[in-house]
Length: 276
Image 1: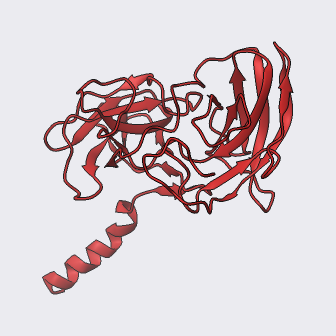
Image 2: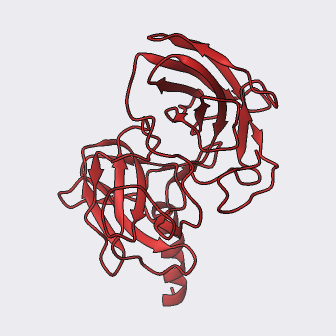
């Protein structure tokens, strides 16, 4: 057999084993199961790259969240060392499932609010499965923040005895996983929200913790950055005329359903008042 033909056959035989094992969820999230031998280590490793140029990004930190109660916005339970000049990182973890997010702040600090000019991973719904003795391969593309964060601060990382539980669905009545509900203390839904729920699970279920009872208006989103983009699933509880919800102290309102549809408003970068 000629050498070239032999090499081609070997490549074809090896291709399925080398192909990345990545699943895409209904909302564009990803579940990554691509693993390599950890040679004594268990965890996640990969490379941080600039989305525009594909060049490695040094000085970025990778945040690892064991759950989504903070909407992947607050301090993470695990944090990598800053990436080197080649953009690589590696972090040891116990076997399990983890959300993976990367950030680089102009200040050089590993934690704190993101501001205009900072970098963050373009995809905010990456769940990595980690197995004993393996390193799950998660490469992240970074983009630069051009508009303020959608949230005023981290508002969903504290459990309380007051709140709202419900489900997000699409126009066909199917659950929307990987989204979140947001709450306002008044009817003006064209501003930064006051509170945000946990990320919805595969059944579309969310829990929104509130500091106290009162009157609230609800909406739902997929991404936490800036105002909704065209095509992003978005919805308001009650439709175009949001319903006022009255919640008593130390109680939960159950069974709220928010229907979401592709957003069709006009995006205006760097605007605090958002036309949705």
